[in-house]
Length: 244
Ligand SMILES: Cc1cc2nc3c(=O)[nH]c(=O)nc-3n(C[C@H](O)[C@H](O)[C@H](O)COP(=O)(O)O)c2cc1C
Image 1 (cartoon, rainbow, N blue to C red):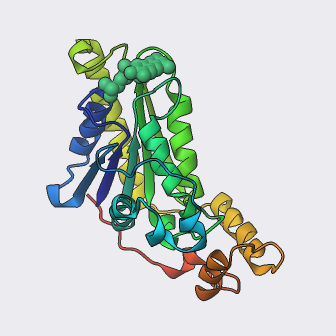
Image 2 (image 1 turned 180 degrees about the vertical axis):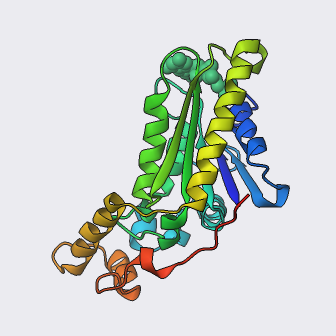
Image 3 (image 1 turned 45 degrees about the vertical axis):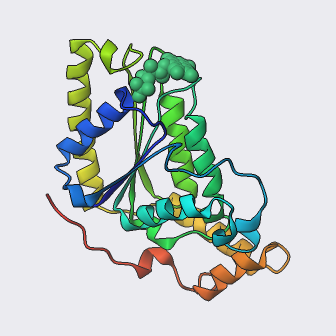
C-alpha cells in the first residue's frame, strides 16, 4: 500500500504523532511512504493568475513545488492530509496548497486515477471539535474525485506533544488502530459510489455543451479522454489492491 502524507504543518506535534501512529499500524514500508511538510515543501501563495486553468499547470509560478506533490498523489493508493485545527479550520499552508490543486477539480481537468484512491484527513485540536477541519480537507479530496475519505478529528487537550497526558496518548493509539483498520478495508474494497459518478456525469454534460465549456483547455481534456462520449473513468482502470 503506497501512502503519501501531506502535513499542513512543519513541526513534529500532536497531529504528526497521531498520523505516524496510524502509519505504524498500517506497517507501511519506508519505500511505500512519501511525506511533504508545508509550507517548506509547498509553493508560495497562489497569485490568482489563472495560468494553470487556461494554459496548463506547468505554467503556474509555483509549478516546481506543486507538481512533485501532484505526482506523489498519483503514485499513492492512500492520500493523507493533516493539519492542526487552527481557528476551526485547516492551516493556511494546507489551504494554499489546495488552491494550487483547483485545476484538478472535477469542474476542470480531473485525474481519473483519483477515483481509485482512499483519502484520510487528520486534525487535532486543543479543546474545540476538529470535525469541521477534517471535513473541510475531505471536501477538497472529494472535488479532486477521491471517492472515500476517512475523517479523523481528535481533541487532545494539549498545545503539543510535551503537553499530552498518558490518557490521551493511550486514546491516540486506539484511534490509530481503528483508523488503520478502516484504511485497510477501503483499500481492499475499492468502491466508486453513486455520488462521485453523478458528480462526474454532471460535469461531463457541462464539458459537452459548447456554451457551458468556457475553457478550451478543460474541454480538450474531457474530449481527448472520451469522457464527453461513453468513456467512464471508473470502468477504465482496474487496480491491483494489496492485502496485508
Ligand atoms: C494559531 C492557532 C490556532 C488554534 N486554534 C484552535 C482552535 O480554534 N480550537 C482549538 O481547540 N485549538 C486551537 N489551537 C490549538 C491546536 O489546534 C492544538 O493544540 C493542536 O493539537 C496542535 O497540534 P500540533 O501539535 O500538531 O501543532 C490553535 C493553535 C494555534 C497555534
